[in-house]
Image 1: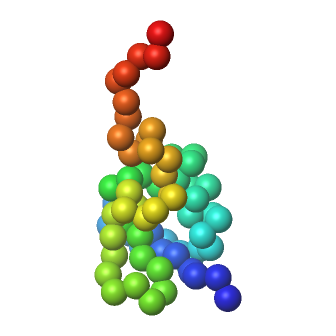
Image 2: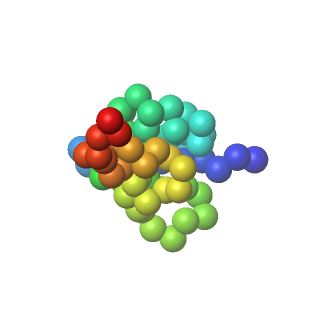
Length: 68
């Protein structure tokens, strides 16, 4: 069985959702890097930015380097 995830927005808890949906929310901007997430079996809630692979690097740490 896939892990069920929960997330908070403005103090309200949502879920359960599957990992694919959580990723879609991150990609679409529904889920922000500072929102809290938790999955079954985890000891505590963590920021969404700390979940490996949830956000691409560009969205977590934007680069100001021009490649021209």
